[in-house]
Amino acid sequence: MTVWEAVAVLVAGVGAGTINAIVGSGTLITFPVLLAVGLPPVTANVSNTLGLVPGSLSGVVGYRRELAGQGRRLRRLGTASLFGGLLGAFLLVKLPGRAFDAIVPVLILLALVLVVIQPRVARAVAARRPAGGDPDGGPLLFAGVFLAGIYGGYFGAAQGVLLLAMMGMLLQDDLQRINGVKNGLALIVNTVAAVFFLFTSTIDWTAVLLVAVGSVLGGQLGAKVGRRLPAPVLRSVIVVVGLAAVTKLLIS
Image: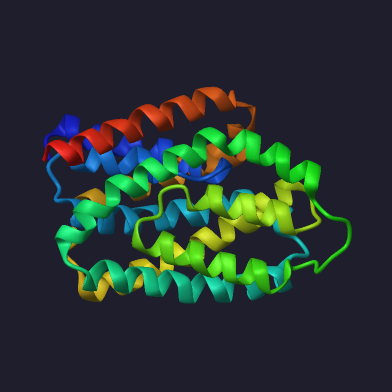
């Protein structure tokens, strides 16, 4: 990488860490930048996953007050995230690289749709949330978190949006506390996938380091002041960068 390319990756890591702490989909910031500096798609995805692990941890630390008293819930749902993330990482490594090249543009467009409709989903969830019920969401949420873990281990963009939508619908709790759990589950998925990739994949360690440093800073920024940032601005940035990623993949 040139110096300016390294700066771009670092700044993208800050943006991803910030957005991940607030809602998720930070991969839509870092992944296109890693493609732009010349990394092959699978290497970019793997390196991005490793780099975002410290940022995910930073977001969990930033939301530690919201996580207080939720240990049982996090352990139960975390089991689903762990096995789902491991399966997703296995699929990424075992499926042909051409399959990833074909699937990822579709996944990015799906993630962008989720980001755009997230406010409407949040309002619908709040209006239809049933009273009472299992405090941990029951088998339906466990299965949903497992599927989100597969998605997160394979690619990861907007897994936070998926988790927030499901938990917001099925859990009786404050949204900020749910967001804290979302950060914890994303950390589990990213970590188990990263450990798997360490032994099975090609990694660009320069990219990992730059994304890691940036995402740690961004995780703290997102936890402290990110909630005050205009949501439409964040959403617009994600959509623009995500469309750039799709264009890059289709052209290449």
